[in-house]
Each structure stands twice: as C-alpha cells, then as structure tokens.
Length: 340
Image (tube, rainbow, N blue to C red; front, side, top):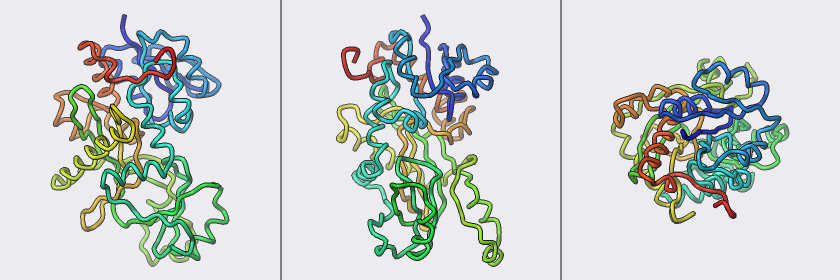
C-alpha cells in the first residue's frame, strides 16, 4: 500500500503535496472550510479533510494507520499547534519534534545559534541600554509583529501602540536580509543547501524606493509584514560560510537534543552586511514559505539533482528512500507513549 503524506493546508502545503505525489505517494490535505475549494483544484491532492480548527489535526491523525501515513510539517505547525501539540501528534512525523521546542522560545533559539558560533545581533534587556537602531520583535517565532526604532525616545513612543506583551529588543543590523534553506539528510549524513530568498515586506520595502529627502514629511511608520518572497543567488565566495553555519547548527543540535538532533528541512534568516559578514536572526526547523519559490527547483538544488527538486519533494524523496532501505525509523520521529 502506498504511504500517505499528510500536512496542514496552509503555508507550504502545495509544494509538500505535489512533491509527495511526484515521489509516488498518496496525499492528504487537512484544511479549514474556507480553503477547501483551493486545495480541491489540484489533481495531485488525493484527499481533502475539512476541520473547524487546525488543532483538530491530532484527533484526525489518530484515525489514520501509522503504518501507512507520515506527517510532513511546515513552519505553520508550530504557530498553530505549539511544540506540545507537535510532540503529541499520534503519527510518524518527518523531522525532529524536539527541534520545535528549541525554536519556540527565542532565548533557547539564540542559545542554539550562539553555541554554533554564529554572529548574532546584540539584544538589549533594558531601554537605557539602547545605543543603536533596534527592531522590536513579538515573542513566539518569525512574525510580522515587529517595529523599527532609531533610538530610545522613538522606542518608547512606538512601544505605547505595540500590542505584544512579550517582545525582544534586537540591534538592527544594516545589510541585505536573506533566508537560507537547508536539508539535513539522516540517510547520507550530508547537509544540502537548496535555495535562498529574501522577503518582500510592506511597507518597509516600498518606502525604500522613495529617496531619503522625500520620506521626511510622509509620516509613515515602517512595518515588516511579509507579503511575498523573491529568489536570491548568493555570491559563490560566500557559500563556504553558508555551509559552515548550517553544519554547525546541526552539529550543536545533537548535543542539545540527542541523539539525532535536527534533521530534515530547516532555514536560517540572516543579514549579510557590506563587509560580507552573516548575522543570524531566526532559525526555523521546518519548511518555510520562502521555499515555495522553488517548486521546480533552484540553482542550488540543480547542483545535487538532475530533476526539479522542491524542499517538499526532497522530504518525500528521503521518506521513500528510507522506506526502500528499511530505515524509515531514521527519518521520522514518533510520539511519546505506548505508540512511540
């Protein structure tokens, strides 16, 4: 019987399910009713299950046969289910459930990146420490709930209208923002760098097209709400550092949550400065939306594969190869308890 790949109908579901179909698997999309018509448009989605809320996924998975199904997560799993919900999913799960715990808390995520010896922006604990432009980020991972402040006074003024109760005050690094997309293969033990993109954010990117002298009287506050993504090809001389960072993150993860640590897809949000230094901002331990640019592959995936290879298909390829080799337990994690 064919294995069925299951995912939530949001974020990167289309590339995950198309990739599973291309690898010869059945596909199941779990979505809200307002999205069901969208997912029923595509012939590569074999089954659409409608739920009232994404938190119903564990109950739905409990009705599926774990011997023939596998959940392939994306970054919205963490925001919808939380690490506790991910840990309890009663189905084989592609990737590390423990990685979600480390991603969920900004302090833990920063500890992870620091131990991997990545350059990190300073974090200011108190208002009176602010001595540089800052970006203020709401707690709980990569979101658009951010604001920019040039100094202490502007920070205090902007904070009055900020809805988030928990936030991080981070030094604003001047440079090019970039998302680096990796795949850590449990079967080969190799780290593959598969793609890169940058976010297109409103209204900060549109403001950047206006000359500085014309911005002064507009009284428009910059925001960082993502509305899309753009592909990026990185200077080849920078790729050694790209690989070093990815390999270091995976190596450190095996110490933080042994024995397997982080495996499968992950992404690093970074800034490249004019001196060509990378500063790490955020880490995502599942497929992120920026990889949707590369359903037909990228210039980097083409260096590994002689066929179009999306991140979603790369996950299903690993599942298929593991199953054929009798090593499926190496690429999935099971829930705690009697079934794990």
